[in-house]
Image (cartoon, rainbow, N blue to C red; front, side):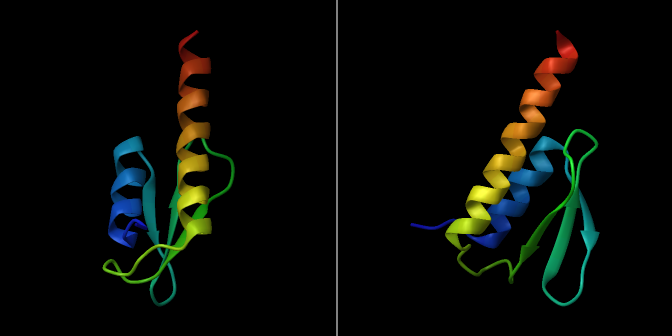
Length: 72
C-alpha cells in the first residue's frame, strides 16, 4: 500500500528538511546536508507515486550518511 503525501512530508520533517512553498500543490524541501532539493507534489491525502517514495527515501538516506560522516 503506497504512503500518503502527508506521510512523506512527515518523514522529511523528522530528518530536518525545511519546507519551501511551491506553486499549487507542490512543496520544495531543502536540507543543509542534502545536495539539491526535493519537490513533492500532490494533496496531503493523495497516495504517493512510487518514484516520490523512492526519491524521499533516497534523500533521507543521503542526509543520514552525511550526518554519520560529520560525526566521525
